[in-house]
Amino acid sequence: MRNWKRLISPVATGVVIVLFAMYAINNRNSLSGLLEISWATLVFVGIGRMLIFFSNGMFVKWTAEAFTRRLSVGEGIYVGFLSALGNFFGPLLGGTGIRAVYLRRIHNLPYTKFTSTLMIYYVIFFMVNFTLALGGLMTLNLQETPYFLIGLLTVGILALLSSVFIRLPRRMQSDNPEGSTIVRKVVRYIVDIESGWRLMLTMPPLLVRLVALAALSVVAQLLIAYVAFESIGADISWGSLAVYVSIVAVSLLVAFTPGAVGIREAMLLLVSETLGVTDSEIIQVAVIDRGVTFVLLLLLFLLTRHSRLRRKLTSHDLQV
Image 1: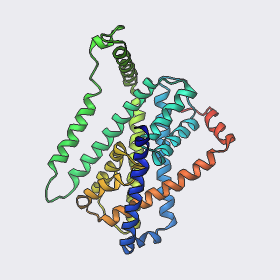
Image 2: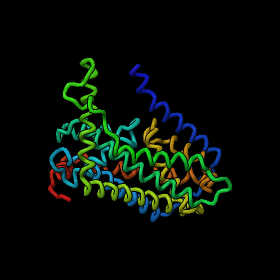
Image 3: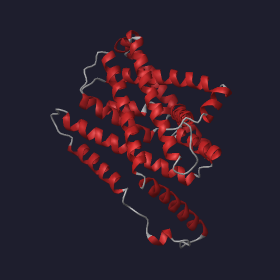
Image 4: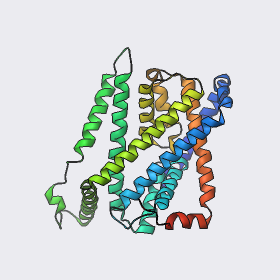
């Protein structure tokens, strides 16, 4: 059974690669514009991607420091890079596993507390992206208003807001919860996660910084998408860009393939008409973004393989 689970990601990735190869062969003319992309565009996309790595790294640093000793800025960015590496080349949420193991081994951060940091990350991350998508949809001049999608996003935002106030029943928070030994262990694990979650919610300065990081990541992704669409001559509104970026973010939740390759594109192709762009333009922008990200991650991986640089990143005491 385990072997089958391990095969899901590579098989799905292989299928996506074959389908893309078939699409590229049958649509060579529509993809030929990629050969004319300027170096300035690629550099700008790379800078935007580096800003996202920085944002994720600082998110790791500031949330982990709520429960463990302080991380250097370099180490936070290094762990964020490792997470990006795992997400891009690994299976579903591979980067999350790498980050959890690193913080456990190096900083003795319990998995329950790490789960708490992950919860606050997802709440803030999706709150910002859902709000962005809702604002984007409201600005689009559509023939048929997507009331269902607007309602779904509104419910999602309200659900995320309500999670801040929901607390576990008192009987679960007791020292000796009811049930069998296994049930008690599970309950204590959940209570430990909630205690970490509650602790971070009592730190307004931390929450403000985390929201600012999520906003920085969204702005960077917006600029990446805008430059990529402009470079291929596609005319796309800022409202459509907002929806586009939000879908890119949500696709990470269903990343059965490394980097959600194929999954993200399929989701975007379903709404391409709503966004006012063609299927070919969606594919071309995806190739630009993924190509630059691949080269950037490869370069960073080769650089951080040197033990001296890695030690410098993880030991320099530059604090923020």
